[in-house]
Length: 109
Image (tube, rainbow, N blue to C red):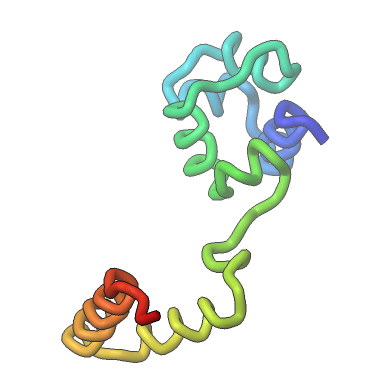
């Protein structure tokens, strides 16, 4: 499915006209129409407005998949994030400082 097809699907599923979407995000109906028929690509600012308007991610509009934050993290990284999330602010700051110190320390031979 193309970006234009996704935009049309989102619009039609909400029973909206091209004009209604265009007016709401501040572009012309003609410009929006060109997005749906894949004659033009929206600029970044317009992508942000479209994603917010349709309540989807920019990834969904562009690629057709809604990526969730942390979805591509390794198991170890997920565990570290979980541990950090369970700490209070001071513990989190101290832990991050220690990790950064360890990364900056020269390796022992």
